[in-house]
Image (tube, rainbow over all chains, first blue to last red):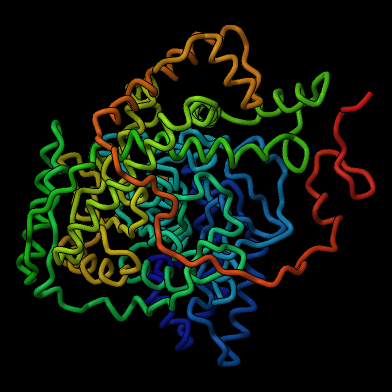
Length: 493
Length: 95
């Protein structure tokens, strides 16, 4: 049965449509693999009964010749997406027992296309974190370990469960979300492909809100083609989210395999950071060489406001979070901790229900929005954001088709890393290469590009023009073809 | 700009998060560390720059001003920690 687990979504789709095996057999294989991989802590809730039901329905539709584009494909769902009647807590204590009476648009799109749900995936609490260690359900272990070491590494975050599950082949693909790098950083840490689409490409309805002007859902998948297939399914215009754009969703898969000859690829000088590990520097150069060899024109560009993106993000995102998370007050859903009066009840509930990182960000957000500070912090950050976006626009206006950068400043680090846990800013720096993309609303993809000296995966990032995800798949595929694919050695079951 | 302990208490109160006395110095240090790092933005000349309001150009769609959902209070209150007869229950707020 383990052969079935090695099939990509594209391969499984083709095999299912020609009747080589049944959707129920594929789902059964995954259910077994999920159970056997519990030591990774990637799934916080398994839904095998639902999976079996959905797979049986898929088999019926296949038999009737009514198969959808994802018919019978077993997926893992990040705990941030509302799934009707199924645990949805954003991996927070404050949403204890919450089972929504509705389905998120992203997951509804997947089920309408025939996909099967295996369960809910672990994540940083409210998607705030870069290591999956802020989850109320404990850290996820990265399926990857350094050569000759048994030390547990983080899978990145916030979509750490999604990335780990995809890398460990305990789902065929996964949903994820990205506010500052939460799809691309964990994808890079696990040797998987993750794409954050353009802001507005995917509906945010039914996805637990973190920072509404930055949040965007996307897939994590084993290869570029699978990511293209999944994005096609989840992207849609949605009357329930007025920021979703009314623009046709292209068939991204057709971009794969197209030549990049004559394309202009920008290399931003500002992404060459002091103290960047040699492995990352070398990998970036390799990526440049691969694309040049494939016929692309490499041009040096400047994005002068790059270094201000992260501090501006740590105003905008906490400000929006403090407002979005005001709804968790112990009244309408989730945890309630009693108090002497209603204010004490709110304060007790929120003190006990939110973890330390979430409390810290709510407090920063409350402060920067408070009377007298709004202009100095929030308005200033939004002005910097305009400048960051303008940097990209100028490069694109000069004819650049996509921008190539490293995805992360390092490979995966250890669970309970001392430096990171002692200094929140150090943890925030994980997103230094990814956060600019959210601030400018652009699409970005992380593609595995090699292994470092310790044998850990590293990724490259491609940044595209608004709504030009197709080019990212096209260029990403060239990198993937040159780099090959990377598999962790199985130690977890 | 930096925060003192009184400000930390005020922010926590505004955010409706109870903090204990011994958490205050730690939070003061953490918040000041983050705020100090953010100060970097002071280097950026933002005179005559419009603050971003929407990251992607998108026309606001309108719909008819008619209710198109609802009528199921039991589903709305179904997840409440305390509810009665489709009402949310809270501690007494009026004497």
